[in-house]
Length: 160
Image (cartoon, rainbow, N blue to C red; front, side):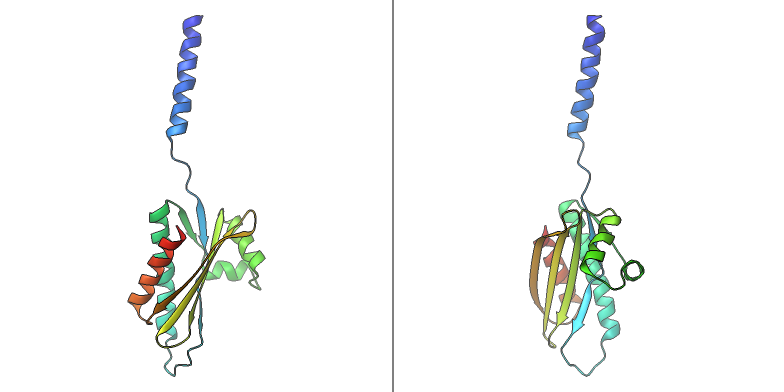
């Protein structure tokens, strides 16, 4: 009887040790579509270029955040947002992220104020408590693919 009890204790101890050594499940961060506002007043239509840069900005941000902190990044596309949240209120967007299984939601807006100056505003929200856990503002120069990519990488590092 005593050897059977020791065997059970060893098995339970081994199971607990395995659970303690197992990595915790990665936190899920929902990345909502990156918004863009152009107040530069430039005559040239750069709509297509900006749409491509917004998509690449979001992809780079998601990739860099996932690699740097071991988080799982769930990108929520514009069609999903439009179907679930019309109008797009903060309460609805946070609920959508929570319903998608995310513990946090990341909102990003890029503002182009001139040919040279771009600004980014990021807000990270705890979807359960519905509170802001981080806010970052950044300024970057140039409206090129390279400048947008560098800004996305910087923002991801800053949010880790």
